[in-house]
Image 1: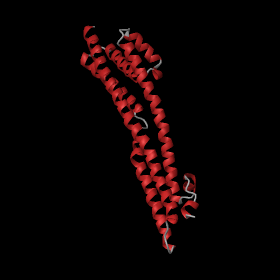
Image 2 (image 1 turned 90 degrees about the vertical axis):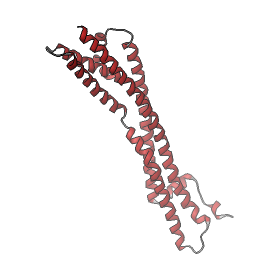
Image 3 (image 1 turned 180 degrees about the vertical axis):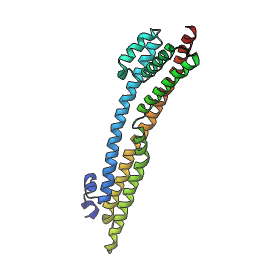
Image 4 (image 1 turned 120 degrees about the horizontal axis):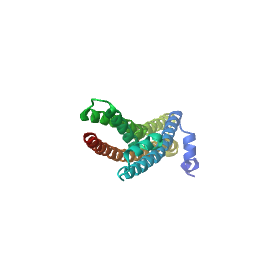
Length: 229
């Protein structure tokens, strides 16, 4: 009977009987993969919510409603209003505060309004980009971590042949097989992280462009109001 066939080469057996460094690599990659999927799903729901709230706010804003009433509503429910609504609230609050001050010209008022919106925009963008750096790190580093485990496992497998008079495939196969599992796990951790990072970066860029366009258009509206009153 072929001695290779007598050995248990199941996935679980190979992982449990791998060398300690290879097992540590596998455990690290498993943790990285689980955390990546956790952040992927969190970011998926967060971006869908951000897009939904942005669409809702834009429909309300460009629907011709009263800006003062909209400001009061957004200020009352600021945490659940959405990113663009908070930019609007910060800009309009600063605009009203500066306009009430005596001796302020239009340029000073608009500069302060734009700075307030820009600062809020940056905070909102930082919140949307949270955890993306982790996905980028997992996507770029995991294949090399898996490769390290593979190289180590193959090295140990061939070092074990030094005390054997005649090397056979049955003696080398388990060590090589367990080493290759580390490479597979590295790719399993990296591929979803890279796909998620690229997809979410694209979605965030689109939201950022919409928010920047809104800031410019809203600034123009406020500037016209400040020159006519």
